[in-house]
Length: 367
Ligand SMILES: Nc1ncnc2c1ncn2[C@@H]1O[C@H](COP(=O)(O)OP(=O)(O)OP(=O)(O)O)[C@@H](O)[C@H]1O
Image (cartoon, rainbow, N blue to C red; front, side, top):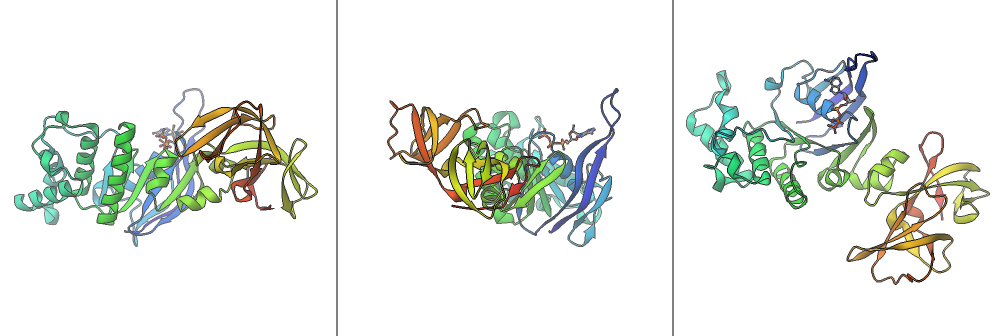
Protein backbone atom coordinates (compact mmCIF):
# COMPACT_ATOMS: atom_id res chain seq x y z
CA UNK A 1 0.00 0.00 0.00
CA UNK A 2 1.44 3.35 -1.06
CA UNK A 3 1.26 6.10 1.60
CA UNK A 4 1.16 9.77 0.60
CA UNK A 5 1.67 12.54 3.16
CA UNK A 6 0.49 15.78 1.58
CA UNK A 7 1.77 18.85 3.34
CA UNK A 8 0.81 17.60 6.83
CA UNK A 9 1.21 19.87 9.83
CA UNK A 10 0.37 19.14 13.46
CA UNK A 11 0.15 21.93 15.99
CA UNK A 12 -0.49 21.29 19.70
CA UNK A 13 -1.62 23.91 22.20
CA UNK A 14 1.20 24.79 24.58
CA UNK A 15 1.55 22.53 27.64
CA UNK A 16 3.03 25.34 29.71
CA UNK A 17 0.78 27.60 31.80
CA UNK A 18 3.10 30.55 31.29
CA UNK A 19 3.90 30.25 27.57
CA UNK A 20 0.90 30.16 25.24
CA UNK A 21 2.66 29.73 21.89
CA UNK A 22 1.45 26.52 20.21
CA UNK A 23 3.98 23.76 19.49
CA UNK A 24 4.39 22.81 15.84
CA UNK A 25 5.33 19.15 16.17
CA UNK A 26 5.29 18.49 12.40
CA UNK A 27 5.66 21.29 9.88
CA UNK A 28 4.37 20.92 6.28
CA UNK A 29 5.65 17.40 5.72
CA UNK A 30 5.18 16.00 2.20
CA UNK A 31 6.41 12.54 1.29
CA UNK A 32 5.44 9.50 -0.74
CA UNK A 33 6.19 6.04 0.63
CA UNK A 34 6.21 3.52 -2.22
CA UNK A 35 4.31 0.25 -1.78
CA UNK A 36 6.27 -2.43 0.08
CA UNK A 37 9.11 -0.24 1.29
CA UNK A 38 10.55 0.18 4.78
CA UNK A 39 11.02 3.83 5.69
CA UNK A 40 13.12 4.93 8.69
CA UNK A 41 11.90 8.13 10.38
CA UNK A 42 14.93 9.48 12.15
CA UNK A 43 15.79 12.45 14.32
CA UNK A 44 16.56 13.62 17.86
CA UNK A 45 14.02 13.53 20.69
CA UNK A 46 11.11 15.93 20.11
CA UNK A 47 11.63 16.32 16.34
CA UNK A 48 8.12 15.04 15.51
CA UNK A 49 8.67 11.36 14.65
CA UNK A 50 5.97 9.88 16.89
CA UNK A 51 3.48 12.61 15.96
CA UNK A 52 4.01 11.76 12.27
CA UNK A 53 3.46 8.06 13.00
CA UNK A 54 0.36 8.82 15.08
CA UNK A 55 -1.09 10.81 12.18
CA UNK A 56 -0.46 7.92 9.78
CA UNK A 57 -2.23 5.47 12.09
CA UNK A 58 -5.06 7.87 12.98
CA UNK A 59 -4.35 8.46 16.69
CA UNK A 60 -3.78 12.14 15.83
CA UNK A 61 -5.51 14.22 13.15
CA UNK A 62 -3.37 16.66 11.16
CA UNK A 63 -4.06 20.35 11.74
CA UNK A 64 -3.42 20.84 8.02
CA UNK A 65 -2.79 18.57 5.04
CA UNK A 66 -3.97 15.14 3.93
CA UNK A 67 -2.92 11.50 4.20
CA UNK A 68 -3.65 8.96 1.47
CA UNK A 69 -3.36 5.18 1.56
CA UNK A 70 -3.23 4.34 -2.14
CA UNK A 71 -5.96 6.51 -3.69
CA UNK A 72 -8.04 6.71 -0.51
CA UNK A 73 -7.97 9.86 1.61
CA UNK A 74 -7.71 8.48 5.17
CA UNK A 75 -7.12 11.83 6.91
CA UNK A 76 -10.27 11.62 9.01
CA UNK A 77 -10.68 7.82 9.12
CA UNK A 78 -10.48 6.32 12.65
CA UNK A 79 -7.48 4.02 13.35
CA UNK A 80 -9.53 0.81 13.35
CA UNK A 81 -10.66 1.43 9.77
CA UNK A 82 -7.20 2.11 8.36
CA UNK A 83 -5.80 -1.43 8.23
CA UNK A 84 -2.74 -0.45 10.22
CA UNK A 85 -0.65 -2.60 12.58
CA UNK A 86 1.25 -0.74 15.27
CA UNK A 87 4.12 -1.82 17.56
CA UNK A 88 5.28 0.45 20.35
CA UNK A 89 8.44 0.67 22.45
CA UNK A 90 6.71 -0.97 25.45
CA UNK A 91 5.16 -4.04 23.95
CA UNK A 92 2.06 -3.82 26.20
CA UNK A 93 1.23 -7.53 26.13
CA UNK A 94 -1.55 -8.78 28.41
CA UNK A 95 0.36 -10.51 31.24
CA UNK A 96 -2.45 -12.89 32.22
CA UNK A 97 -2.94 -14.19 28.64
CA UNK A 98 -0.74 -16.75 26.88
CA UNK A 99 1.23 -15.82 23.78
CA UNK A 100 -1.45 -17.41 21.59
CA UNK A 101 -4.24 -15.52 23.37
CA UNK A 102 -2.29 -12.27 23.03
CA UNK A 103 -1.88 -12.80 19.28
CA UNK A 104 -5.52 -13.78 18.87
CA UNK A 105 -6.76 -10.75 20.80
CA UNK A 106 -7.05 -8.24 17.90
CA UNK A 107 -9.05 -10.79 15.87
CA UNK A 108 -11.68 -11.38 18.52
CA UNK A 109 -13.38 -8.02 18.17
CA UNK A 110 -13.68 -8.02 14.39
CA UNK A 111 -17.23 -7.29 13.29
CA UNK A 112 -19.49 -7.79 10.26
CA UNK A 113 -17.83 -9.07 7.13
CA UNK A 114 -14.43 -9.08 8.82
CA UNK A 115 -15.53 -11.59 11.50
CA UNK A 116 -13.51 -14.82 11.41
CA UNK A 117 -14.30 -18.40 12.46
CA UNK A 118 -12.31 -19.92 15.36
CA UNK A 119 -10.29 -22.05 12.94
CA UNK A 120 -9.50 -19.05 10.69
CA UNK A 121 -8.32 -17.09 13.73
CA UNK A 122 -6.07 -19.96 14.83
CA UNK A 123 -4.63 -20.32 11.33
CA UNK A 124 -3.87 -16.60 11.18
CA UNK A 125 -2.25 -16.61 14.65
CA UNK A 126 -0.09 -19.58 13.72
CA UNK A 127 0.99 -17.93 10.48
CA UNK A 128 1.94 -14.72 12.30
CA UNK A 129 3.81 -16.74 14.95
CA UNK A 130 5.67 -18.62 12.22
CA UNK A 131 6.74 -15.35 10.59
CA UNK A 132 8.36 -14.12 13.81
CA UNK A 133 9.46 -17.64 14.84
CA UNK A 134 7.71 -18.03 18.14
CA UNK A 135 5.66 -21.16 17.37
CA UNK A 136 7.31 -22.97 20.30
CA UNK A 137 6.25 -20.30 22.79
CA UNK A 138 2.49 -20.20 22.20
CA UNK A 139 1.49 -21.55 25.64
CA UNK A 140 3.79 -19.33 27.69
CA UNK A 141 2.78 -16.14 29.50
CA UNK A 142 4.67 -12.90 28.64
CA UNK A 143 6.46 -13.03 32.04
CA UNK A 144 8.13 -16.26 30.92
CA UNK A 145 9.66 -14.66 27.80
CA UNK A 146 12.82 -12.64 27.15
CA UNK A 147 12.49 -9.01 26.01
CA UNK A 148 13.27 -9.99 22.41
CA UNK A 149 10.66 -12.75 22.46
CA UNK A 150 8.05 -10.38 23.93
CA UNK A 151 8.77 -7.90 21.16
CA UNK A 152 8.30 -10.64 18.57
CA UNK A 153 4.91 -11.47 20.10
CA UNK A 154 3.98 -7.79 19.82
CA UNK A 155 4.97 -7.85 16.14
CA UNK A 156 2.96 -11.05 15.57
CA UNK A 157 -0.03 -9.37 17.21
CA UNK A 158 0.34 -6.44 14.81
CA UNK A 159 0.69 -8.76 11.79
CA UNK A 160 -2.23 -11.04 12.59
CA UNK A 161 -4.80 -8.57 11.22
CA UNK A 162 -2.88 -8.62 7.92
CA UNK A 163 -2.41 -4.86 7.93
CA UNK A 164 -1.67 -2.90 4.75
CA UNK A 165 0.69 -0.72 6.74
CA UNK A 166 2.98 -1.58 9.68
CA UNK A 167 4.08 1.20 12.03
CA UNK A 168 6.92 0.60 14.49
CA UNK A 169 7.65 3.25 17.14
CA UNK A 170 11.12 2.69 18.66
CA UNK A 171 10.38 -1.05 18.79
CA UNK A 172 13.88 -2.04 19.86
CA UNK A 173 14.73 0.49 22.54
CA UNK A 174 13.92 -1.83 25.47
CA UNK A 175 16.29 -4.53 24.22
CA UNK A 176 19.97 -4.98 25.07
CA UNK A 177 22.58 -4.32 22.36
CA UNK A 178 22.87 -7.90 21.07
CA UNK A 179 19.12 -8.51 20.95
CA UNK A 180 18.59 -5.16 19.28
CA UNK A 181 20.84 -6.19 16.44
CA UNK A 182 19.22 -9.60 16.09
CA UNK A 183 15.65 -8.29 16.32
CA UNK A 184 16.24 -5.52 13.79
CA UNK A 185 17.50 -8.10 11.30
CA UNK A 186 14.39 -10.16 11.99
CA UNK A 187 12.13 -7.14 11.44
CA UNK A 188 13.80 -6.57 8.09
CA UNK A 189 13.34 -10.22 7.13
CA UNK A 190 9.66 -10.20 8.14
CA UNK A 191 9.08 -6.96 6.24
CA UNK A 192 10.74 -8.36 3.12
CA UNK A 193 8.71 -11.59 3.40
CA UNK A 194 5.35 -9.85 3.93
CA UNK A 195 6.09 -6.81 1.70
CA UNK A 196 4.00 -4.66 4.08
CA UNK A 197 4.71 -0.95 3.70
CA UNK A 198 6.45 -0.16 6.99
CA UNK A 199 7.40 3.02 8.84
CA UNK A 200 10.04 2.55 11.51
CA UNK A 201 10.68 5.34 14.00
CA UNK A 202 14.00 5.58 15.82
CA UNK A 203 16.47 8.14 17.12
CA UNK A 204 19.29 5.64 16.47
CA UNK A 205 20.84 6.53 13.14
CA UNK A 206 22.72 3.26 12.78
CA UNK A 207 19.52 1.28 13.31
CA UNK A 208 17.63 3.33 10.72
CA UNK A 209 20.45 3.22 8.18
CA UNK A 210 20.89 -0.54 8.49
CA UNK A 211 17.31 -1.63 7.82
CA UNK A 212 15.62 1.13 5.80
CA UNK A 213 15.07 1.35 2.05
CA UNK A 214 14.82 5.08 2.57
CA UNK A 215 15.38 7.39 5.55
CA UNK A 216 13.70 10.65 6.48
CA UNK A 217 15.81 12.86 8.76
CA UNK A 218 13.75 15.32 10.85
CA UNK A 219 14.62 18.24 13.10
CA UNK A 220 12.19 20.53 14.97
CA UNK A 221 9.20 19.19 13.01
CA UNK A 222 10.86 19.86 9.66
CA UNK A 223 12.10 17.26 7.22
CA UNK A 224 15.78 17.92 6.57
CA UNK A 225 16.54 15.28 3.96
CA UNK A 226 15.13 12.08 2.49
CA UNK A 227 16.86 9.38 0.46
CA UNK A 228 18.57 6.02 0.49
CA UNK A 229 20.68 5.70 3.66
CA UNK A 230 24.04 5.58 1.84
CA UNK A 231 23.05 8.46 -0.44
CA UNK A 232 22.14 10.71 2.51
CA UNK A 233 25.35 9.74 4.36
CA UNK A 234 27.50 10.45 1.28
CA UNK A 235 25.69 13.63 0.30
CA UNK A 236 24.24 15.40 3.37
CA UNK A 237 22.31 18.57 2.58
CA UNK A 238 23.32 20.43 5.73
CA UNK A 239 25.54 20.32 8.81
CA UNK A 240 22.77 18.85 11.01
CA UNK A 241 22.30 15.82 8.73
CA UNK A 242 26.08 15.37 8.35
CA UNK A 243 26.45 15.38 12.15
CA UNK A 244 23.44 13.17 12.80
CA UNK A 245 24.54 10.29 10.54
CA UNK A 246 27.68 8.27 11.20
CA UNK A 247 29.64 6.92 14.15
CA UNK A 248 32.07 8.25 15.13
CA UNK A 249 30.53 11.61 14.31
CA UNK A 250 31.83 13.74 11.46
CA UNK A 251 34.70 16.03 12.52
CA UNK A 252 33.74 19.68 12.07
CA UNK A 253 36.30 22.47 11.70
CA UNK A 254 36.01 26.23 11.34
CA UNK A 255 37.95 27.25 8.25
CA UNK A 256 37.76 29.31 5.09
CA UNK A 257 38.27 29.25 1.33
CA UNK A 258 40.75 31.59 -0.31
CA UNK A 259 42.25 31.77 -3.81
CA UNK A 260 41.14 28.23 -4.68
CA UNK A 261 42.33 26.67 -1.41
CA UNK A 262 40.54 25.33 1.69
CA UNK A 263 42.29 26.45 4.86
CA UNK A 264 42.33 25.65 8.57
CA UNK A 265 44.18 28.55 10.15
CA UNK A 266 47.32 28.74 7.96
CA UNK A 267 47.21 25.11 6.76
CA UNK A 268 45.96 24.61 3.20
CA UNK A 269 44.32 21.20 3.39
CA UNK A 270 42.69 20.91 -0.07
CA UNK A 271 42.20 22.74 -3.36
CA UNK A 272 38.76 23.87 -4.52
CA UNK A 273 37.66 24.95 -8.00
CA UNK A 274 35.34 27.91 -8.54
CA UNK A 275 34.69 28.64 -4.88
CA UNK A 276 34.42 32.27 -3.73
CA UNK A 277 36.49 33.33 -0.72
CA UNK A 278 34.35 32.79 2.38
CA UNK A 279 34.24 31.44 5.91
CA UNK A 280 33.18 27.80 6.15
CA UNK A 281 32.40 24.86 8.32
CA UNK A 282 34.49 21.96 7.03
CA UNK A 283 33.19 18.47 7.85
CA UNK A 284 35.56 15.53 7.52
CA UNK A 285 34.20 12.00 7.92
CA UNK A 286 36.37 9.80 10.20
CA UNK A 287 37.19 7.58 7.22
CA UNK A 288 38.34 10.60 5.20
CA UNK A 289 41.80 10.78 6.80
CA UNK A 290 44.97 9.15 5.42
CA UNK A 291 48.02 8.91 7.68
CA UNK A 292 50.90 10.51 5.75
CA UNK A 293 54.14 12.09 6.92
CA UNK A 294 53.89 14.88 4.32
CA UNK A 295 50.08 15.26 4.72
CA UNK A 296 48.89 18.90 4.86
CA UNK A 297 46.77 18.60 8.03
CA UNK A 298 48.82 18.46 11.24
CA UNK A 299 47.09 17.63 14.52
CA UNK A 300 48.17 17.06 18.12
CA UNK A 301 48.16 13.31 18.75
CA UNK A 302 46.24 12.27 21.87
CA UNK A 303 46.27 8.48 21.42
CA UNK A 304 44.70 5.59 19.59
CA UNK A 305 41.65 3.43 20.22
CA UNK A 306 41.88 -0.15 19.01
CA UNK A 307 38.73 -1.27 17.18
CA UNK A 308 39.99 -4.61 15.78
CA UNK A 309 40.15 -4.35 12.00
CA UNK A 310 40.57 -0.57 12.25
CA UNK A 311 42.05 1.87 14.71
CA UNK A 312 40.74 5.26 15.68
CA UNK A 313 43.47 7.88 15.87
CA UNK A 314 42.43 10.51 18.40
CA UNK A 315 43.89 13.99 18.00
CA UNK A 316 43.10 17.67 18.46
CA UNK A 317 43.34 20.80 16.34
CA UNK A 318 42.60 24.39 17.39
CA UNK A 319 40.11 24.86 14.50
CA UNK A 320 38.13 21.71 15.32
CA UNK A 321 34.68 22.10 16.90
CA UNK A 322 34.62 18.49 18.19
CA UNK A 323 36.37 17.85 21.50
CA UNK A 324 38.58 15.29 19.78
CA UNK A 325 39.15 14.45 16.12
CA UNK A 326 38.43 10.80 15.41
CA UNK A 327 39.97 9.36 12.28
CA UNK A 328 39.40 5.73 11.38
CA UNK A 329 42.26 4.03 9.60
CA UNK A 330 43.23 0.43 8.92
CA UNK A 331 44.95 -1.32 11.85
CA UNK A 332 47.77 -2.18 9.43
CA UNK A 333 48.95 1.43 9.79
CA UNK A 334 51.58 1.99 12.47
CA UNK A 335 51.08 5.13 14.52
CA UNK A 336 54.20 6.50 16.22
CA UNK A 337 52.80 7.11 19.71
CA UNK A 338 56.06 8.73 20.87
CA UNK A 339 55.36 11.64 18.52
CA UNK A 340 53.15 14.52 19.67
CA UNK A 341 52.05 15.39 16.14
CA UNK A 342 50.22 13.36 13.51
CA UNK A 343 49.94 14.34 9.82
CA UNK A 344 47.00 13.56 7.56
CA UNK A 345 46.15 13.80 3.89
CA UNK A 346 42.41 13.89 3.14
CA UNK A 347 40.06 12.01 0.80
CA UNK A 348 38.20 14.83 -1.01
CA UNK A 349 34.97 12.77 -1.33
CA UNK A 350 34.77 12.55 2.46
CA UNK A 351 35.09 16.29 3.02
CA UNK A 352 31.98 18.53 2.97
CA UNK A 353 31.71 22.31 3.11
CA UNK A 354 28.90 24.19 4.88
CA UNK A 355 27.79 27.81 5.02
CA UNK A 356 28.77 29.36 8.36
CA UNK A 357 25.54 31.38 8.60
CA UNK A 358 22.93 28.84 7.45
CA UNK A 359 24.67 25.43 7.90
CA UNK A 360 23.59 24.59 4.31
CA UNK A 361 25.93 22.44 2.22
CA UNK A 362 28.10 24.33 -0.27
CA UNK A 363 28.71 22.24 -3.38
CA UNK A 364 32.40 22.17 -4.19
CA UNK A 365 34.84 20.45 -6.49
CA UNK A 366 37.62 19.49 -4.08
CA UNK A 367 41.00 17.90 -4.83
N1 LIG B 1 -0.13 15.99 23.02
C1 LIG B 1 0.81 16.92 22.94
N2 LIG B 1 0.62 18.17 23.43
C2 LIG B 1 1.55 19.14 23.34
N3 LIG B 1 2.75 18.96 22.75
C3 LIG B 1 3.03 17.75 22.23
C4 LIG B 1 2.08 16.66 22.30
N4 LIG B 1 2.64 15.57 21.71
C5 LIG B 1 3.88 15.95 21.29
N5 LIG B 1 4.11 17.26 21.61
C6 LIG B 1 5.31 18.04 21.30
O1 LIG B 1 5.57 17.94 19.90
C7 LIG B 1 6.95 17.82 19.64
C8 LIG B 1 7.21 16.53 18.86
O2 LIG B 1 6.93 15.42 19.71
P1 LIG B 1 7.08 13.90 19.22
O3 LIG B 1 6.66 13.01 20.34
O4 LIG B 1 6.42 13.72 17.91
O5 LIG B 1 8.67 13.80 19.00
P2 LIG B 1 9.60 12.53 18.81
O6 LIG B 1 10.55 12.91 17.74
O7 LIG B 1 8.79 11.31 18.60
O8 LIG B 1 10.35 12.47 20.22
P3 LIG B 1 10.88 11.18 21.07
O9 LIG B 1 12.01 10.58 20.26
O10 LIG B 1 11.35 11.81 22.34
O11 LIG B 1 9.70 10.27 21.21
C9 LIG B 1 7.65 17.88 20.99
O12 LIG B 1 8.05 19.20 21.21
C10 LIG B 1 6.55 17.48 21.96
O13 LIG B 1 6.77 18.05 23.23
